[in-house]
Image (tube, rainbow, N blue to C red; front, top):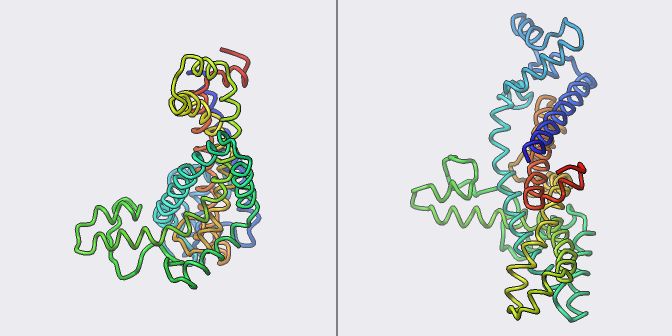
Length: 343
């Protein structure tokens, strides 16, 4: 297992290096002065210009410039935002927690709804139930996320007036940011309107989380169904049935844990599409996350924000993809043999 972890760590480092190379090359294609694209300083003074040239080794060869670029970015120097004139790193730190919160809630919804329906589709003897569930998942998978988000906003936000359709919390509530996760911050708040604020945050996150959860929900249902059908035909399941174990015990204690292992692998493969969907959802619902922040930077040609946003999103996808692969291998050591042909 140690050798495997070293391989995964090397993969993470190599992929991150490739990400830096892509960003480094793309920065030189921006239709702006190189020092401006790197630092975000539009009209630098002579001293600032000299500092930028020194930090990024602009008068040296390409290799030195690349090493300087990587050093500055790893040290947290992403420059300043062209539009807000604030540190890009501080802005990034402010928009990442809402994105993680939205993704976490959407993931929980997808798993809590998808796994039981996948099991029901696999175990039910009713063809009508099976076809209904699979038709619903196929429909959900085919619906464009931007159309679904607008439709839910129209129904539940405008027509029925049940849920808010933009933002993370009502501006009337002044909740100090402790963790950046508003659901936790409202619970940590000791003011008079603590529970009202928590209910308001919960209401704000329902529509974007449900919209974002549709894609992983459909995948979870289909993978759980296929895995359960495969597991229920295994020899150890038939042996458990022959010993007279209750059916619910066989399903919950023997079949389900083994069926969830393939699901874990597919969750890692789904991170890329999930992240792209999250960006669209954040824009539709004006969610103050990294996706909406990145799109706003693209519209405003905020080059430092674009670099930081792409770097953050890509690095998160790389990290969690490798983490899920490691967890999958820990749960299913045989996969390591299949990949490398070694013990």
